[in-house]
Length: 332
Image 1 (tube, rainbow, N blue to C red):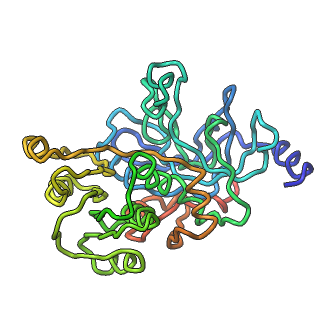
Image 2: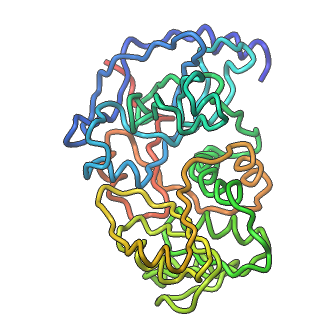
Image 3: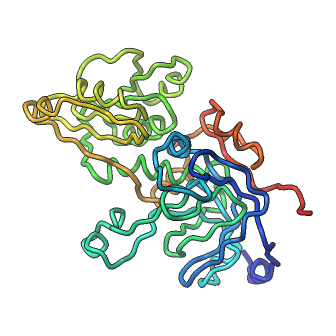
């Protein structure tokens, strides 16, 4: 972007309030006059373009994070309108979601995603992106390539989460891998694993969803066989029990699912069969953006909803729904 356009973006008169979707502790509500956030030192103010609806957002409505109240949402593409780094003004960005202290044991030992004082937009202690504006530490922002459409860039955060699996584990091309689940996260995880050259089997319940996986994976409607590495991406407590049964003795089970309910497994089986269990959460953004830009991971277009129609977005059965803040009604 030219210097003139950056200066123009910096000089934009900001409104005194914004529209937002807020969780009040029990339900999501539409707030047409939410106060505009003020960026602190080291933060940037972002104007949201698209905000993706994640299964975690739906789980919050079911009690996944009972201590959270505030603006929902954590997957987004935005334009920087205020920043302590002038080069970012007017640029499109997506952003990591772990706000950390930099001083606790976890931050000092190279594990900042587990910061003792971690805050997460739309999930824990921090307003999220289901609003016209949000603030975020500038260090968490990543530039979106000019050639990448908003509708693809909004996938950056969940794709980064899928990439955390090979970031954590050495995936050998000779290993037989299974992904349990046929939803959005499973679709990204399976594509990422298939890039290793390893044979990937996807096990789900919906033939129409499984059809999407067939270009890069074998698909099954019923669990069968055993695998060296199994990824639970079902988003359901029952998925963990099935995943344990599919994992070979001495193999690895990777859990990507988060949900409000509790899950039970026989821990004696874990010990006797010497299974390795890894939790896997957030991942690297820059590789995710490169995969999206190069088209090495292909994802369907998002189904877009106006902000005030957020309930329809939450209820959507599309592959991906998103709240579109790019065109909103003029204020009174």
